[in-house]
Length: 416
Image 1 (cartoon, rainbow, N blue to C red):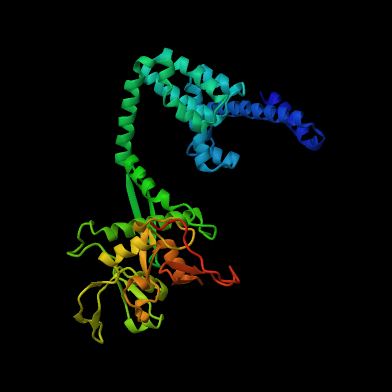
Image 2 (image 1 turned 90 degrees about the vertical axis):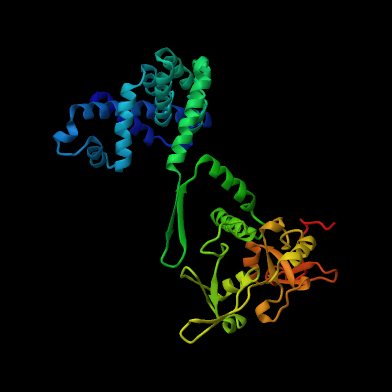
């Protein structure tokens, strides 16, 4: 075996010494196909060697704790890759002869072998040896057309082809098992960072995943040609919009006797001068810009604090823009009024054109609907919003974007 491998290595070295640029395109394609077949055949040889070494106990005889650890050091692999190599070698050794033949012939690659072996094992347990033998042939034929990921999906219905009499019952059993695993594994982890941000991680079951997709997918599309957010940032903002909508609905359970709400404490004088930061009730602080943006569509609860911070007087809560006024605003703007945005009213905040802290009143002539992204954009950017002569909002772009600063309007929400 070693002599044959040394000859193969010499042949490969000779190929590397041959310049590719002198080869015709047809021969390049043929050479690529041949190289791929050789790669798969060498993978079969490698797995055979790993399986034999593992069976002989070579790794432990040489002082390693396992074959995977020995391979990690010998071949300079990651321990995960070494462990998968040992597992695949065992899988191939126990697989039907047709699976090994497909790999050694170069007809399939290593990842397809993993899929075929796992699928055939399932078929064998469900429908017996004869059906499993048929499945090998079907899957190898499919592997000539489809990659491992698609082969895995097709394999979920392999019984339709090799044992149709048990296919429906097996599919139902597999679905129930999948639902059981999903229910068992579902979780969300929320880790608070030192600066007040949260790190989310978890696994959603199928129903929750569908609900999340349905809720945030419409909100993750770019809002216009000037939307420079990354896909991850758009998903973040979409999730935040969904949470704001839930808070605005008033249908969440009470928390400590109060409706679910975000509580921000800030100094009024500092807020009016656009200098005051705010503190969330869970600890982290917000910039003055963030506080003013939240105050646009919030319930304001004035409070007088003593010198030591104790509350001396708490005023009555009042909505800035709600009820009939918000309904009138929705009838006028139809959705986010920023040019090029198609967000519907339910995803929008009511923004004061002249901030209430600057003396702006709460009226239809001093308000505009903005989605979460454009609300932030307006507070942090150089755009200016005003009402045109017909009472509808228009936005003046910054000079760097349009030297003429021609007012723009939203064309996605036609007026009735």
